[in-house]
Every structure is written in structure tokens, then in C-alpha cells.
Length: 249
Image 1 (cartoon, rainbow, N blue to C red):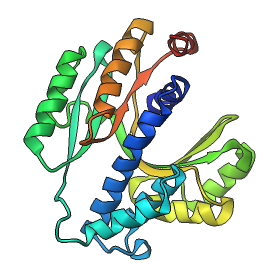
Image 2 (image 1 turned 60 degrees about the vertical axis):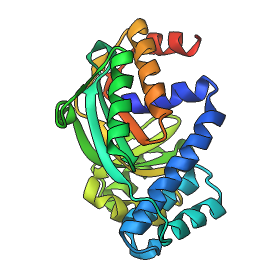
Image 3 (image 1 turned 180 degrees about the vertical axis):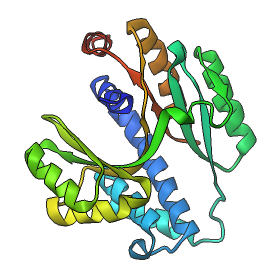
């Protein structure tokens, strides 16, 4: 399982849901506002906005929050956000990609840089770790939607590239440019997904031990708590024993 999936499981187990949820709502709303401002405010005519709304709904963002975010994009007072990607290394040489939306580049760059250095990491140049990841579309369905063969057939029909199934989830990957088309085809066949988004998928991973994982999580949590940071991706890999030990802390 890739690092970002394990990380989500850890966050869930460690009981940080409420704090994370309010942050997540505001980050998803910001993505909706930016997508609507850059294109058409009608999700049916704006693929990026449609995906943003779909992801917000799958995370239980209330309908009025979604509508307010779209409306905000059409007002004259809507902030102008720059989308920036930062790349660096966390403790133990783990590659980290930070995606941000900010109205103040200097503030965000300074905060991200100091967060890395205070937590045993270092910020690199753009492209310094990007080669360790592929830009992909990711659609996640619950295990209950069908067995692995059923989902695999639906994914092939929809034009997806790969499926990883376990007892909890079916994770379907496709080319980043095909995400809108693939997710719509899957929805027609399997119903509403749990999650539909563009991700950075590690193509090589870095193993961490228990101490390294604890340090890494501190860095990732601090980055995630920054209002300018939309999402953080890593390429860490940890054994089940290390994961279990961390979950019990």
C-alpha cells in the first residue's frame, strides 16, 4: 500500500478526525472556488470543478458550503490564489511533495521551508523529488461495491490503467488527463465513488523504521495544518509491525 493511504489510516486511528475535518472542508472549498474562478461556474461545463465538487461531497462537505464556494468565485472580492508545488526530503530521506494554494507566495514558501528544517527535513528545488512520482487519476470504491474481478472489468471498460483491491477498498488508477472520463464511466457502472482526485503516485518508495515514521508524521502533520497547504504526498513505505507500533502510540 502506498504511503499516502497508510498515512490516512494512521490519522484516522489517531483520532484527529474533527480537527482534520474542519481543515479539510476549508481546503476543499478553496479548491472549488479556484476551479470555478478559472473556468465555468457550472460543474457540468467545468471538469476540474466537477471533480472538486465530487471530492467535497465524498468527504461530506455540506451542500451549502459547496454552493457558497462556487458563488464566492464569481464575486469581485474573490481572492487570487497561486498554485505552487514544493518538493523536498523528510526524515530518513523520504520524498515529500507539498501542493499549496496561496495569496502570498513569500509567506507560504517561508513557512514550508521552516517546517521542513524544524522537523528534520530539507526543501529542495522543483523537480528534486518529482521524478519519484507519476501524476495519476485515482478513484476509490469501497470493497462492498463488488469483488476484485467485477471492479477490474469495470475499470478496464472505463479506460483505467490499474486496480489495487483489498478487503476494504478498490483503488483504480488512470492517466491524469483521463480522470474525468474514467470516473464518469465508473460512476455509471459502479455508482458514486468514495473519492475521485488527481494524485502523485510513488514509482519508488523509501522504507522507514519506527523512529523515522514518528519524525516523518510530525513533519506531515505540521504541513497539513498550514492553511495554505492543500495536500501532502510522500513515498514512505513501512512494515506492518512499524505501522502497528505507531498506531498504538
